[in-house]
Structures are given as C-alpha cells and as structure tokens.
Length: 119
Image (cartoon, rainbow, N blue to C red; front, side, top):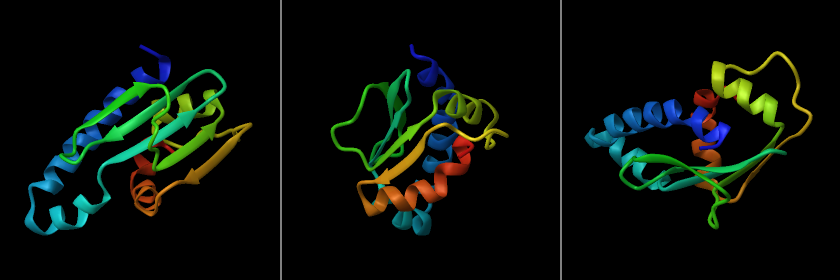
C-alpha cells in the first residue's frame, strides 16, 4: 500500500459514512446522486492515486490514474501528505499545486469535499 493510499483510508471511511447518511434521506439523496460517481486523481512527484466514490456512496482509493477523472490535482507530495494527516492546510506553500476539473460535477463536489482533505 502506498503512503497516500494509507493516508486516504480514514478519509474514505469518513466521506463514505457521510454520503451514506445523505443518500438515505429523501431530499438529500436527490441532491447528492447527480454528482456521483466521482474519480479524483492526485499526482505527486512520488505517487499517483485515484480517490473514488461510486453511485452508492462507497469510497475507495487505488494506486494509479483513473481513465475517467472528474478532478486532477497535481501537488507537492509533502504538502499533500501533511494536509491529509492534519486535515488542515499546511503552514508552508506547496512547490506545485495545480487543480484541473474535467467535469462540472467534479468541480462542484471538490468545493464541498476539499475540507475533508485539508486543501
């Protein structure tokens, strides 16, 4: 298991628990479902991983790059690791931080979920 994969495990559980709760509500499910599935690719100088949410709200992380990303984040490895560990923006600037949105639903979801990643 990669360093980033390991750091994402508690985030996956947290996001999945929250999404399942929202999907069980009549009003909230109708709002959330159109934004799923999601594939977010994180590319650092050391690793590439994909954070995924399926249509049922299940989350997972896989090493490598999704063929159908909604969001691609190229970021400094140390900055991302620190953000994932603390869930807060690190007190140093990343050497590289570029976010690109391949889908509108990815951009919207990122605006909501970025706090879970410390970004």
